[in-house]
Length: 100
Image (cartoon, rainbow, N blue to C red; front, side, top):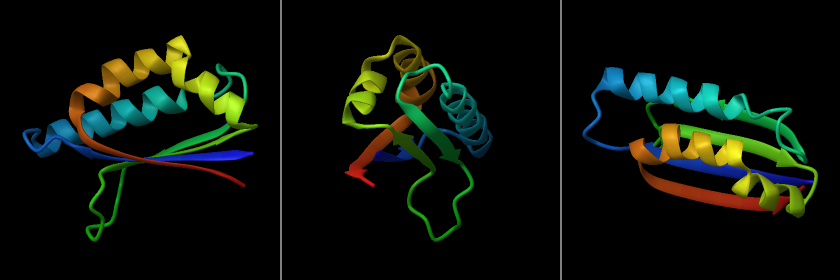
């Protein structure tokens, strides 16, 4: 099994209400990928960080193996969500993948 964790910071120019809307869009879009991508075992998006956090959104996924993670990265449904709901609104992305 492979764990895939992403942390994003949203762009500074977004208002608080825009950030809330973007977070909901990211969560809904990514969590809807469950059952659509082979090898994706679990997917969860956290959008309510504590004030002590310096990230706005966290993606937490588990894949059957590294091949599943690679397939997810280029899968058209994932790319569509990333291109429409994530990339236009984020300024930083931190990723860590590891075996569990």
